[in-house]
Length: 390
Ligand SMILES: [Zn+2]
Image (cartoon, rainbow, N blue to C red; front, side, top):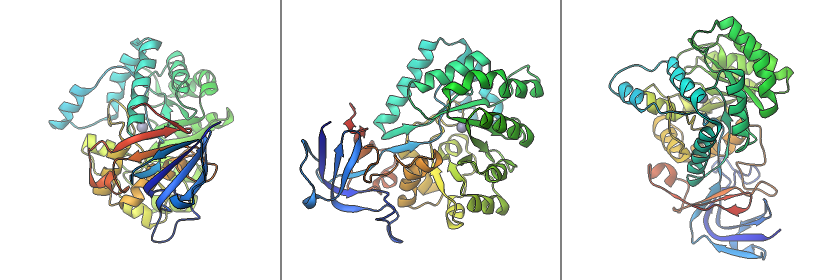
């Protein structure tokens, strides 16, 4: 193993709870250095105190932040829905049924085509600073197509999620389909998945069906998460809190009881501002959640229908501008927040022993992520201690 010291870091965001204060959520170290040893962080502190290492990298005063943790994406698909997007921007309302278009294209694609698409999207994410990504199935909706989607996703990440309960496929009886999702499809998918997820929404799956799918997944060792309260009010957020799920995603339409349930349960509310941007829906109120003490994550929801962006910096900028988060809160939510949403404490932070995943910004401060929207600010990405080709 070789060690590397990255020094002359103008601003180092650590997300270290021991360094954070009421005025500094991010545990910032100014004029900092970080030492990477093998795949882990071995030292963090002021540059003038940094120990020797095998290799020396000068950050030239740039800011360094933990690699982004994108805890919600749907990268295994084929086809393109640009015409649907254009129609929506011309006034056609968004409906969950658009998923079926992608299902037809995904089923028709070869394994090689699907794998190449995931590889391209993961590379695109890397170039924008994402170092951990969760990938869901959900565009196959047959035993074979869901299982192969997850097997492909597993080539790129350990954080794979079985989302057979994305939508009831065209022509299927809803009850029979839930039987399939909780039976043979689960059996085929569980070996390739860490999580099980349900789209709990009007037009998709109701509360009872969501309970059934989550319980079946749990019995096969999969941990639960939910898509909930995206298109309107619903039972999903309170169900997630009741079951003590790690995260519930979207959270756009919440009442006071939903917010209280999230604060009390500790379930992470994952907000997906790319969706509201791409569907012209109202944004979730992150300020209300944060003020109530809810843990918040930001993720891309990268998918071909409702949010075809892979950019965490864009999501940070939207969260600040449209969801009333501060730049520090949004940066935290896109790193440590995403890690919490995946129940991980080895990523989303730069502390002793954490995975050496980091982003060098072409900027003096994390604030630029929101201050300079749309600008390619990622000067370099390191994953498990290795610089990535850009
Ligand atoms: Zn999603």
